[in-house]
Amino acid sequence: MASTLFSKVVQFAVFDTAFHRNIPDYAGRYAIPENLSTNVDFYRYGFHGISCEHSVNAAAKLLHKSSTNLNLIILHLGGGASATVVKNGISVDTSMGFSPTEGLIMASRSGDIDPMIALTLQREGKTLDDINQLLNKQSGLNGVCGETDMRVILQRAEQGDEPCLLALNLFCYRIKKYIGAYFVVLNGNVDALIFTGGIGENAPAIRQQILENLDGLKLPVVLVIHAEEEREIALQIETLFLDNECAEIRHKI
Image (cartoon, rainbow, N blue to C red):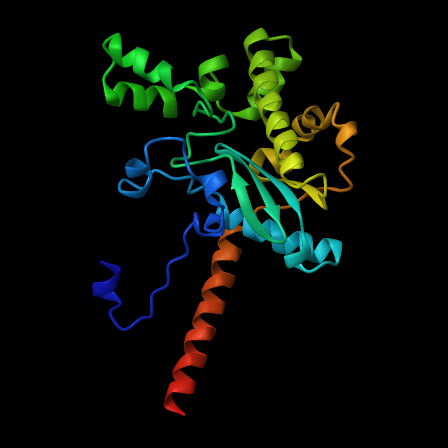
């Protein structure tokens, strides 16, 4: 419809997966038959790329370093949650994969699970739609404590609610595991650990629990960066637009 109504307007697309396009095969490839990886394109595409790119640029300004010299672990924690490891300004691994369901525990998505759970559910009579609904809408924090709003979960946990306490512990423990793994990916050369997203920015209790017992990693800087995805999209489009204009001018010359 947009192309019909605005046929003379130059259109640009900014993809949430684009920031992860340089992930090496040893991190992006699944250990499944090659024809499925190449013909069906089952691969680690990653998500939250726009947020990650904004975090890299913001960290570069805050740390007074070039983005191409930055090694970061970025935690985008919101209704969807992901961890990304950045080496010299480039994403080299991320927790979300072929879909946003993989990785960290989220508001209603399971995150990492044993694939045999889904196959066992199917064997027991669940349809593919049932399993999709279960893993993406009925799992994660929602599955553990029946609540998706982290503010409510924190409040109930403070009151001693056991399911909410378990949900918090599961959520934070999974994140700690990814921080440790990505610390090793960077060989310990980490410039900053970044929290972003609704939970990452606004839940200091969650940040504190995640950072507990990480002293051995000797993380030099912990940053909280506001996720400005819309602004990042606008900046990328501005860059593309200016590049396009320059190309047209050069062509005319």
